[in-house]
Image 1 (cartoon, rainbow, N blue to C red):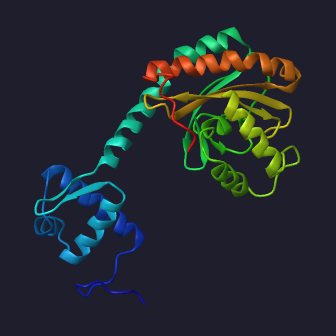
Image 2 (tube, rainbow, N blue to C red):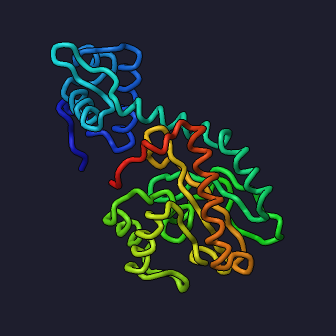
Length: 265
């Protein structure tokens, strides 16, 4: 049996609560600073329900509350808007650098961002070696087994790395156990590059590097992928500087300054 809110009606479902919260943000955006009574009236909700929604949004910094004045938009929205702008501009900014890297090499080049616990592929330039790599633009690939995914989380804590590793379930036939993977991640974090050693696709290897934004935080990553026969250990080592330099050049265009690289979280 559904619970009832303070007005005697049924408590809203999760989706209803979400839409009410979004409506609340729209009203505040239109109003500037608005008090609770006026906000509840505009939404057509009781004060208690409106207060409950607003309090949750304040806790997430989506709203800000000033005593005796009311609610206004919160600092988290500035952060989200900034990141959204970066991500929308990112493929355009990165594309010339990716094309230059692709021209220099004969391998597949990827660009991606972190989306939840997955690497979201935003761009792909297919290599010229007639080797099929199954990735596609729009794919969301695992963090644990992809070079791009690893590069996106190089600044994270070891605790977070372990969480990401375990979320993927049992290791694959080609994948390392948890302790080996953590040891690799420590090494990758020191070098600023990450490898995929046939962990995601059989006979496919890659070298990846993070792209940093104005704050110094990782905002994206690039990778160069190819068949293992063209990606032996020596070539992967040689590619680390090339891939890292390309990622850094994209970062500089986004406003990154190497002096502003945050400490490991």
